[in-house]
Length: 110
Length: 108
Image (cartoon, rainbow over all chains, first blue to last red; front, side):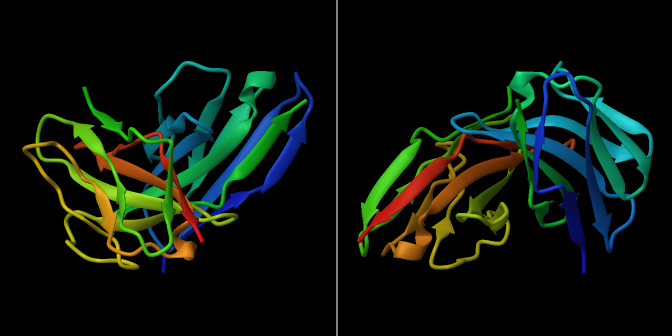
């Protein structure tokens, strides 16, 4: 069966520090992968999506970047975090029945 | 433009009363629509899809193309239904567009 793993679950980082959030998928090949940010009152905002290795599309201009070094690995990064990067980040993959989401990472930038 | 609108941020309903979570969409073409639910301290998960025409946990949703709506309904609310509900639309490019969500609070 397909599973999606996302870590860490929570992260507290100082302003200006780098970020790396990782997401891996098992049980499927060549999945479409997505990074979302969930904010209260703003719903789920699509940040990046990838249809294959090395293929990244950005939905909104921001301080973050994404990479897909392997078929089932999707990484969300930043070189220097801003306070406004705080939020809840969700990774997802797309299957025939819709999206399956990871458990999310709560990022607090202090 | 592709858009999903959930007009209610918060909906409070007494246990045993009917529930209706509203969702309207804007999409040129035939959309694929979903409802996702997030219970407290759990991950976001699929509740139902319009294609399946199924009933999950007593919830149903009918796609009304004339009104461009996909409202989620349940005849008798239960306390365990308290959660955050998101209506979503999958476009042809496989991206899913979410509404801002409605928090359903079931009162005892």
